[in-house]
Length: 445
Image (tube, rainbow, N blue to C red):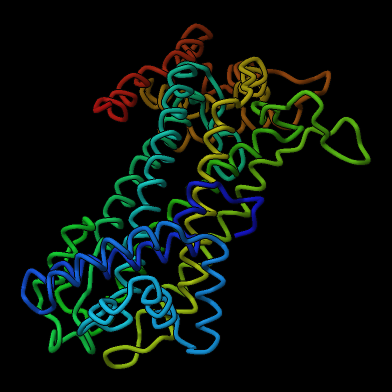
């Protein structure tokens, strides 16, 4: 991922320096387990740890280049790493990697990296949830218009909108926790996964020390359905980010102006038009969401490897694993900041709510008329006629409010007077159960 969309803590997980340190830890733990089982000398495991640990800890750009230089000859990254480590450890290095295959190191390392990345993403989601909860309660009873198909529907509250997003991201947190558990898997099983040259207890030891579970059947590689599920979870989170970002973009439109991204002092919206205040953050989030989701299909295609293994998945994962997690980490942090500072305009919401002359109360009037004795068909026709009359005359001198057009309908006037209509259209009825919904969403918090 380009530096513009990269945060340091997530980037560190995917750095070559950290990857090599994890490789060493896997090798050192495997050696310790083998020593306990008598497969290699105990002194060899001790020397590997004592000499190898500081060598691994010292890895920086120069050391990465030295390992890469060896790989340019060996054409094999794990062999290049073992060669470089052996130069510092000495003769005991021959006991590293006993009975293991490259995928034991690579796949277990990837599991460590992905679980660490998932932990950061869960923390990101926690921060976002806190921001959404705070803003939802702030605007729990701030009236606004609900829209379906982009058209005014019935009143809701801005807090209810945010509560819905909170519930969605809470589900996303659960999905990510489940995906983390599925990917947190270790494989130290040797060629084609039969443990022919390495004891299964070595795998169990390494897994326990790294906080992973053992892969029941590794076939030399960890099955990629686990990875596909992980990236699919990231894709769902990205889709939720885009949904909220799209809502903000719509609310910031000039014709709506109910909420907008915080506009910083000195910020410029356009190189040509000084008046512009563009939703640049939410538009950026929409793009990042597309990018994260684009990695889901390659992860799915990685599942179908040949026989016990091939490496067609390797090049894909070297790109999508860091890019998807780095991109999502950045997007979640940006969305959290955007929601914390989101500027909300309750007065404009109230203006838009009543901007169509009261037609948004049509369902309540329809129900009241049926309860007053009109058939549903007759009531629907009368209410729709009054609503259309209100629509057509909006902004004109002859315009009348929905209430007045209803009373002009003979069928309506025969069963309801003005006071009954006012009671039917009382806005308080729209928000009678807001607390019930909030209790459902936030009761566990």
